[in-house]
Image 1 (tube, rainbow, N blue to C red):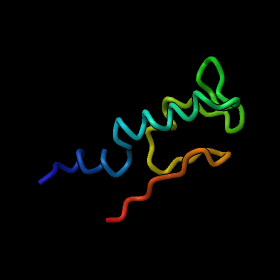
Image 2: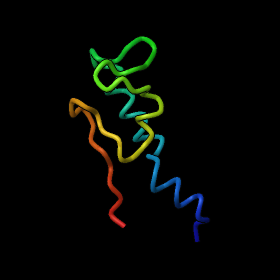
Image 3: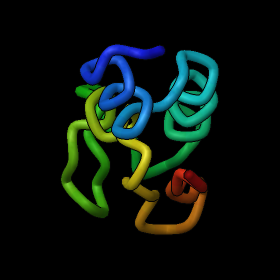
Image 4: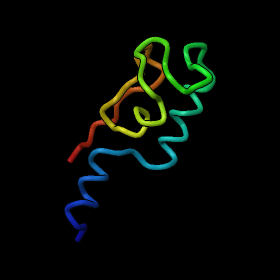
Length: 68
């Protein structure tokens, strides 16, 4: 059985692979700055890309919703 903090982490954050996939999409985008911010939403992307419920403002990646 997972500890409650482990379960919370899985509910809130993505896997390393999913985070890497999002970051690669961001890095290829013209709206991604040298300091790793998005010109559209003004978010610091190394933080935003980790959270399941976040999504790209121009649709490059969608939020992940837990099914359980």
